[in-house]
Image (tube, rainbow, N blue to C red; front, side, top):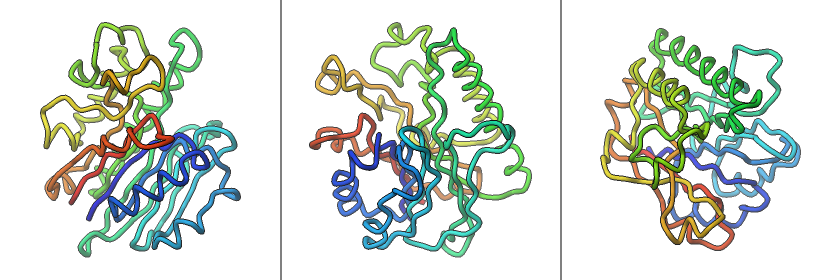
Length: 257
């Protein structure tokens, strides 16, 4: 089964691009982030016609996550537990059957956290604490799961073109990276790093010719629970999509299990 994650940076702006990639890549399940659409306005019929069951957790103008699956989804859950006052649409998960075994797949859009001297950075770290608690709980239940999405975390120096340029940024701050590795140390596997030790990026800014210069960063991750990691066959980045017309600043990342 092929499971992908992609921050599309606006469903309306990327409608044709997303359709083209779905037809080319033929993923079985896709976790989308930053769809920037309320649920009622999401163009689900277009993707249902391509054979996908569609579930969304939307928000007007920004954020928003979605799951597309060619196999039925069960127990769809919206929102990350731990803060009843948090109304931002950043987390959705559902159960799917993979070779007869149930696997939960979550689409997450972790907060950016910049500027770090505002309330946005503590919110990011608090959100990561809640994700850690969610992961710990689901590991204890021995549920197989995948945390797929835009983490807004640059884990290691190899994951950015110029580490010095990112010092002090919320994506590369020691507190951010520590929280990411704390999550990983629960027993989660970074799928791309498990299968590929080379430099690989998933995001290139629209500014300053970042794409043309390959000045990218790796912030889109697929984190696998032990039961899923044991079934991992490959993980790839569809880098070529960044060169398409009207691209997102992110590209798809996918695993085959």
